[in-house]
Image 1 (cartoon, rainbow, N blue to C red):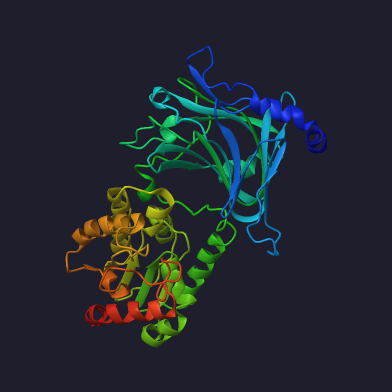
Image 2: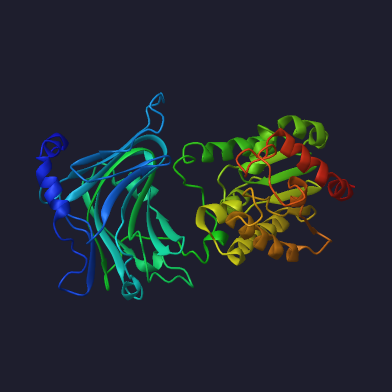
Length: 436
């Protein structure tokens, strides 16, 4: 059935579907239906972007723009559509947005524990357009906990091929210690960029055969991988190839910085500071926005430090493991340690200056701040003060009460020029000793 025909269906039918009793639990106790022509009992469908949301209470809903004067092509909307029958599916369309979401939520929290041991999350998916979009699926696990699985690469491969049945093992979403006993959002479809997808027949089954893969969260941080975030997939590999050429052109580099977007910032906000302090060392900055430990590891294994023998390698990575995956500090630290090992193998005569992950959040009790502090406590143990040296300069970014100022890090994560000056000055005494 065409999209236009769906939109012409009487609104009364849409309202009736949402007013009818939900299918919270089928007569077969082996399954829990989250959306099958209507949401779970007491629940509704919400469509949202990074700034606003709307409830799908009729045939369609559009996320309002908070500023009516906003001039942008950004749009996010959802509608009832058809798979096997009229209005038995949901379609999400989004354009030029850094975040969009389709959620089943609003009812009494559901208990998913019976579906964890051998269970699956199953649904039908039709990827209509995904050339410039991304896709992931998420389940809340209660008390601010959520677990997501990326589906960007498979989604792009399925674009235009019609309905596909997707089955994830619940092991893809469950980490040690998770409860899932009171889940307020049993299904969330997160997107970014531009695209359109439809989903239908969303359910949890106590047993099933998965046909969709997911990384093992316990080994993700130490398993080399290219970055595949929606917003990076078009530039990440070309940047890596460009960096290979840059490294090749600087065989006498005495200093190399390795890390994520904070290190990449030496080429933008921190460029003048970098030139002032490090140009004389023919320094190279190997920072890539969004990188987790496994992405840095992949780059190291694919030539980014080959052909050079710097006196010092400054390594800082891990804040994206914290931010993207809420990863256990021990797993983040394991990823950093794996990068140290790779650097030692490839640069046997180079001293490694391992920096503590910079502070996040304005207040010291912020969740990201505390998470990174726990990681840093583990990273300190990697120093042998012979080849690996640990330095935590976080206090230099904070005031006497531990508050992080937006005058130093405007987004409470990335330094501005003043922040890079603080970094350089705080690191300078240690770095000069190591460069001797």
